[in-house]
Length: 467
RNA sequence: GUGGUUUUAGCUCAGUUGGUUAGAGCGCCUGAUUGUGGUUCAGGAGGUCAUGGGUUCGAGACCCAUAUCCCACCCCA
Figure (spheres, rainbow, N blue to C red):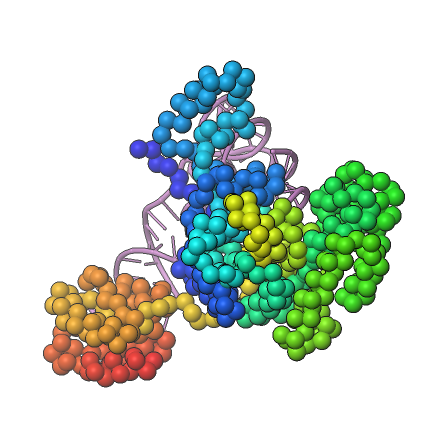
């Protein structure tokens, strides 16, 4: 067999022990906050039926779904299909459903909606679940963008209450603060406000084009947005109407009162504003903070658009202001995601943390807590067969006391065994040779100080239990 | 999907206008130390120069294609 150079697929990575310690720290922190707010964990399969995923993320999203080739002789089917319909032509699109029926999950929200519909009889609503699993996107990798990455989602279905949205803000705030981030912004907007704006300027059908364009405001400026709006079918007159809205400045109160005037004739727009106000009211009482105090990390942003494919109410996006990174979290309310799977009238809302981006940010800011690398507390060296036999009951006794202990598995040179302990940052080494076996006193070496002492088995256990 | 960029030892990287046997640091192995790591000293192993073509008397270097890294766009966590 040819010598194949080992590699992993584009955009994927291995995680070594030291990285896993840090990754688990992020996962555990976020999970603990989810639990604190009453969310329960589930998992779903890595792959879903392709039909479950397609059409939920828009055209761009569909392209980025990793499809899996059918097993077996998948080619036999297109051939017979072709015979059945004379006008069948071979294109990537026409062929796809015939050769692929499974795909890797693209996010955790759509599989969750599928889960809820399938398990509706065993679920008691409102159902609050969290899920921490990898998702896959066939994107081209770049900074903060991987083809395989973890999302940490919390979603609630079966509750219209805006209390949920308010609590999402608190979950973001609490988890990111626990992770050591100091300066971040949780942006909120409402799809209904965007609909209202599109309605006012008389182009409700162009809402997606409008939001995609204005979402780029902070990146390409008002000139860029104007240009893009013109390309997307808006007139100069429309843009003149739009400009004052998207350029709204000032406090959240100012923005809201200005928006109320602009949207005074739009029922849906006013509803969106009322929702934002209600969320703010909840937040004030849940935090005992004023709106000004909340504004340190919470901001109404009319230009925030996000995935409009299933969001219908509030939308969230979280950015850190301490590092150059795209959003580290996002979410929103979706009123009919389960409807696509046949369960109507069930509303849902949720948020997601991008664990890999958070990892990159914490690494850049040096925010990982130190000294959590090794788990082994003590290594027993292995001199020879006789010493190994002597060590076995000792290692049992240590482990019985819940002390992480390992016996070096071969009688390698002591130098090699000591280096092993050193590399692995094991704080203690026990040496058992003929002297020790004769006297019953074991040599315990403190690897950090370099000191040694002779201890009985009982003394050893007592000492390591304390340490 | 579009554009730019990177690829030389296990890792990070030098390598002159195309010219003999491709180097360094770190890591690894051996010894100084047959029962002691992290420091020091001496020695050693390790390369299809990403892959496949091409130009040339001669290619790590120049050209083309592919893969890959990173970055930007689209879009997104």
